[in-house]
Length: 178
Image: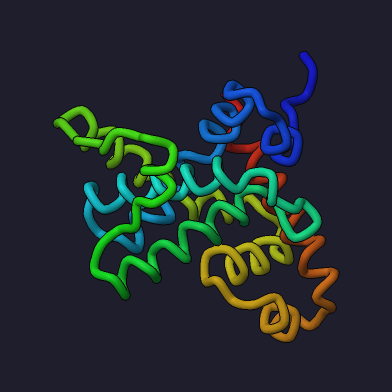
């Protein structure tokens, strides 16, 4: 079986099936990340939907040299969370441009959000080597700038980026296993 295409390949493609693969690959982790910060399933669903809608509309601007696809998605989600806190509501401009219908949750929808939110990020991080775990936790989970991560772990920003890329690639392979 050929290896799964990289996020870079999926985002560069104009085929809907490729973005769907990217979406399915990262949905659980983005949902877990947002839920930890949003607090309610309804808010989580809106933020996750807008995160992926923005990723879809901006996919051509994704630059793999700046970091892995999951880091880019979490950066989008983080900015949406900050914007939502400031405005008191979730922005929906990307969803509106794509003419997406609002998501209305029924009992099954709430259950699925809770299942995705239960994604055990901490246990997943424990599977990484300590140097990668520290960098992924600080850069992606705690959202520290590269310069602070590098200072804390005592290496160059370039090495931080390398460890982050390797750690996220390992996590992606772990999550994708059947």
